[in-house]
Picture: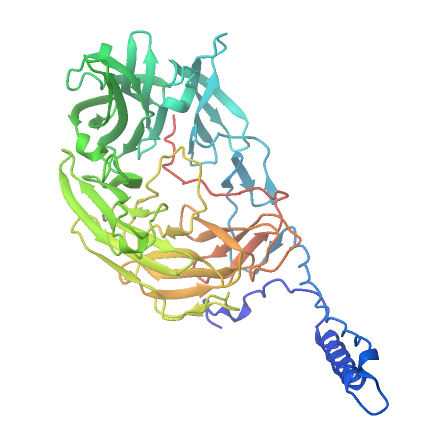
Length: 544
C-alpha cells in the first residue's frame, strides 16, 4: 500500500438504528386492505341502499421513524501514523485559549480577548499579549495597555504597562480599545498602536511604535497635522484601521475625520496615510486619501477587506451593486505606496465576494473559495488578471476514502499568507488555507444536505487543478495549518455528522496528515456547543 493510499481511512461514524422495510410493508398492507374494504361498502347493489351507506374507514397512515441520532464520537482517538503533532493549538472559544492535543484538554486560562488584544506566540510555547486592562480610574475613561508574558503552561511571567489611552468616543462614553488598532511587525519584534481618540487638547489621530523587548513606546507620529489641519475644527474621528506591509517597511492607517465648517455645518472625510517604518522609528508620512475612498462613495458601494497584497501594493475587495450581485463584477482595487490608483482587477460577478480572502503576499496573489458552489478563483494583483476553476465532478457527498486526482507540484519557497484582516479581529470560520511553500490550497466544502460536509479539497495554486479529496470525520467548518504545514486541523460542528444527520456530540477537532490526507487524531467532544475557530497564526514573537 502506498503512503497516500486512502483505503485504510477510518470510516465515518456509523449511524445506529434498524431499517425501515417492516414499517413500509405494514403500511402497504394497511392501504391495500382498507382500500378493498372501502370499495365493498360504497358500491350500490340490489340489497344495499346507498343512502344508508356509512363512511368507509380511513387507512392508517404510515409512520416513518425519525433519523437515528449518531452516538458520541470517541473522547480522544489516535489513528496509526508514523508520527503525530504534540504542539498546542490556539483556538477561539469566547477567548483565545490553548487546546492541549496530548491530553485532549481545552485549557481554562484566557490568553487574550478577540477583537481587542494582540497575541503573539513564542518558539517554545510561550505567549506575548498586548492586553487592554482597566486603569483603575474612577471615571473609567482610561485603559491601560499591558504587555503580558506567559510561559508554555499559561503562567504569567511578567506584566508591564506600556501606555494608557484616555478619551471618549463619539457618543461620549469611554472608548478604551474601541478607538484603537494593534498590529505586529512581521518579525515579531515590534507592535504598532493606532489611536483615534479625544485627547485633552482635542481629537488625536496618531501611530505609536512599541518595542516588545523593552515594553516601551519608541516613537509617535501625529497624523491630523499632515497636511496641517485646523485641529480645533475637528469634532469627531472614527475608529482607525491599521495594516502592516509584509516586509515591515510601511504601515497603512485609515480613519474618518469630521470637522465643522465656518458656516456651522459638519462634513466628514475618510483619510488614509502610508507611514514609513524603520525599526524603532516612524516616517516619512504620505497622505493617500484615494485609498480611503469607497466605490460609489455616498451610495451603495461596499469594500469588505483591505490589506497589503505585496510589499508595494495595497488592495481591497469591493463590490458596487448595480442590480443583482451576480451581474456585478467584484473589484479588487489596487494602489501603490504613493496612494495612486493602479486600476482594478474585475472578477466575474458570479464569484462570491471573498470576505475571507486568502492573500499570498509573497507573490501578490488573492484567492477566493465558495464552499457551497465549490468554485475557486485566483487574481494576480501585481500584473492584473484572474482565473477560476470548478472541480469537474458535481459530487458534493463526502468521499469514503482519499481520492487522488492529480500529482502534487514540487515544493516551493517559503510563502507568507494573509487573511486580509486585522491580527486582533475575531477569527472567522476559515474555509481556505495555503501551504507554507505556497504550492497548495486546502479548502473545506459544504455537502448536499444542510450542515453536511463534502470533505477537504486540495488544489494546485498555480493551475487551480483539483489534486485530492479527503473524507471528513465530522461536519467540518473551519481549517488551520500547523506552522510547518505537516498537519491540518479541522473544527467539526456540534450536533451534526459529516453527512448532515443528527449527532450526540459537541464541537470536535480532527487533525489530518497533509502528506497522506488521513487523520492522525481526533478530539471527539470538546465539551462545548459554542463557536470554535482558529485565530490567524501571525508572526512568531521575538525572544526578549
